[in-house]
Image (cartoon, rainbow, N blue to C red):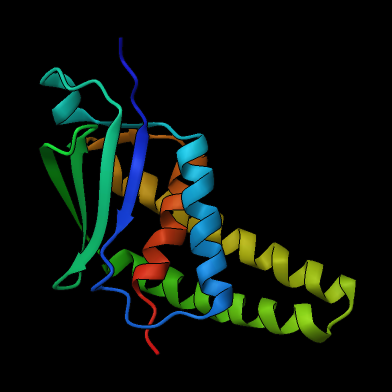
Length: 160
């Protein structure tokens, strides 16, 4: 029976140079939420009879996002590589708004925090839409899964 979802996700630890407590919390939540509920169907693997669940490893190599897909036993199925050019600006904007959000949590009013959070969600949603476009024809997924994957893509781009 088909089970097109991610059962395990791993980030290439060599790619992540620096993280703080806020980012680490975002990473943990994104991974937990992603594993709890997601839709993920790598089309070539699925059409070849590998119907899920899947293990996914995310990394960045030479400025490209690498999504290494394996079966639930860890056997490699396919690798999807996406150029990150269209994500550079959303990643930069997301980092900037997250920084403002974390600062606001510590000292701003509830209204100010809500305003910043709305802007943060907007950037996040736009980036998830872009990811869905870039995955089209390669991996079928849904908006909540793309949103969580974008969070993890951001974690891979953190520099100290």
